[in-house]
Image (spheres, one colour):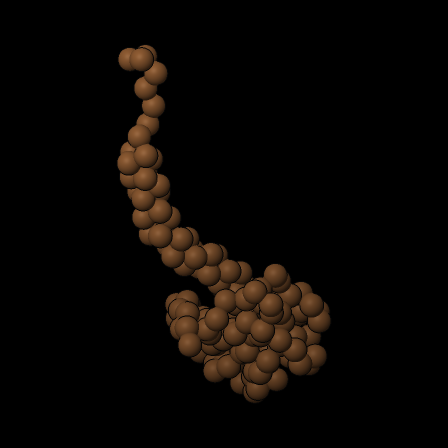
Length: 140
């Protein structure tokens, strides 16, 4: 019976062990990529908010009190001053009330946008788009 060869049990166990090791290494790497992709939604919306603040500063001029656009974006007067409606910034992992604008200054036009997800399935932590346009995420 020379022509009837197959894999031995030991060979099959070695293959299963190798696949298990590869899966154990790959799953944490992929999980990190998933959270990174979720945070990209917040980064994009924070950029839109920052652009709206810069436009507001240009319209009002350097001598205006910008406290009327500082705070959480679930406040009607704030999102309307920035040109948003009540749900423009709602996404899959972040809602409009998750975004907060602070430290608005006119020269040079800048602000800080912070976001913390309250949506189901959203990533943990807080993302910050600072005055110099650097995006960072701190996990709790």
